[in-house]
Amino acid sequence: MEAVPRPRPPNLHRQVTRHGKAVWYVRIGKGPRVRIQSAFGTPEFHSKYLAAIAGLPDRQRPEDDRTSPGTLAWLIERYRETTGWTDLSMASRRQRENIFEHVLEAAGRHPFAKITTASIMAGRDRRAKTTPAQARKFLDTMRGLFRWAVKAKLIKVDPTAGIANPSAPKSDGYIPWSIEDIAAYEAHWPVGTRQRVWLDVLIYTGLRRGDAVRLGRPHIRKGVCTIKTEKTDTVVALPILPALMKTLDAGPCGELTFIAGEGGRPLTKESFGNLFRKACREAGLQNRSAHGLRKAAATRAAEAGATVAQLNAIFGWKGAKMATFYTEAADRRRLSIDAMHLLGNDG
Image (cartoon, rainbow, N blue to C red; front, side, top):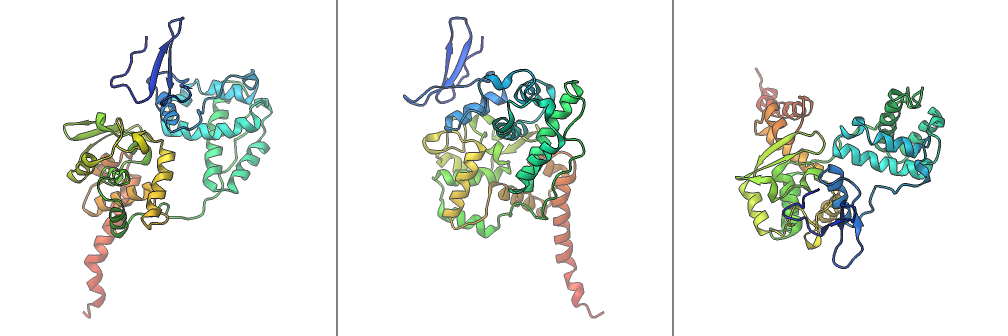
């Protein structure tokens, strides 16, 4: 029988049916009960718990006629039972669940054997009108599904084979925060506000948004927070710097997580992203994001002399690509500053 977690997460309740089965649900005050369908202790359970706390709809759909054998919905259900799905990171699964949600709405009852290359391309092109990134996510999701279906001998031809991702416009990505940006935010949101907690957790840990919203006192031991990153499944150990500890002590923080909404409720990374952008705008900062702070932190560490191995350890990267990008940029800056006097050398 599943054990009751200690301490009990806020508003999480457990009930044992007459058949001896444990049922978990979220209920805030006297509001409706929101059943959590996933197995307790899994990443899906945690994700659905946070979604229920935040008042978001549960991504898991009830069984209906769409899941009849032979339908696309049935194929997706079987795919979720494979290691090809469970081996994906929690972040990738959540992202692909969002894609599947729309696919099921449009074609859940459609026979999966009749899905053609033309229909996949049409789905890609519709999303490309929004952003190329959405089209690539859609294609990656459907490619994973149908490649598994071919290996499982459920279909003979992969309808995603040979379909190229749309080209993305050249971009430097998220805008890194400047020292002035950070100062403007701090001036508007002083220590003692939850918006200041948000900033300092991000800037003094360098965590991605999805990891930052999970970070809390249970992760800290002897002044070091240890957490497995959502995207790469890498464990990072980050000492709590004095500036961050001062902010956390002042709060307000949640019971389980430092980053919290009104009433101390945990936030999903999506809802936090929206709230953080709003806080930035109220501080007079446009087009600033949580990931921009991560880029600023990596730049600052590289310019201070951090090695590739150190950057990987801090930011949870694997390989040398990302860390080398920052160290090479820092090296170019130092070399430029050191050599600039040569342009004025008459000799």
